[in-house]
Image (cartoon, rainbow, N blue to C red; front, side, top):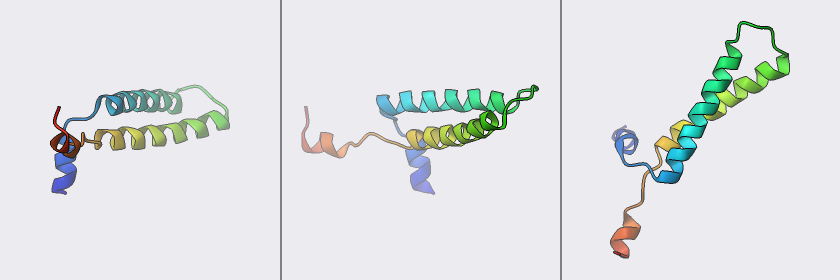
Length: 77
């Protein structure tokens, strides 16, 4: 549990920040589609459910990705 907390608060690489932001956006849009007060085709609702799940997983995993400092220690600039 300590490792998760450390990784959650550690610095996230630039690429994974972009992935996280895109995943959050996709998840939010899909959430809006799921909660829309209009009748939508079943395929759209099903796809939105999958996108919410994928967005949540991608955002969480990209947040837990940390920079590797061992390479900098071996090869200082």
